[in-house]
Length: 87
Image (tube, rainbow, N blue to C red):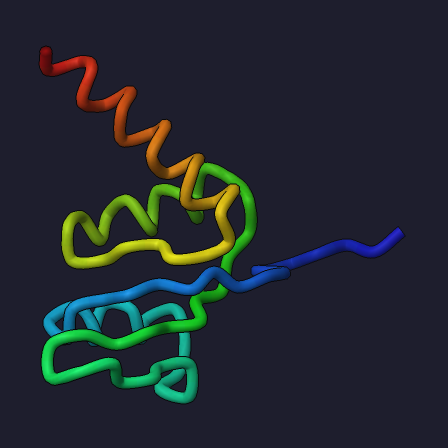
C-alpha cells in the first residue's frame, strides 16, 4: 500500500488577485492562470479531509471552487451548516 504524505489531487479555484500571496503559501506561481485584471484560475493542491476543506473555506468570498463538482458540493454543504448556526 502507498502512504500519501501530502495533497494527491488538485481542485480548480477562481481567486481574487488580493488572495494570491496566501494561495502561494500552498502552491507555486506555475499553478496560476490569469483570467482578467481581478481574478486568477489556480490548480490548487488538495486532499479530501477537514484540513484542506478548512483552507479553502478560510479564503472566504475571495475564492470559488470551480471543479471538481463533488468538492464544490461539499464546500456548499459545509458553508450551509455554518450559515444555519446564525439563523
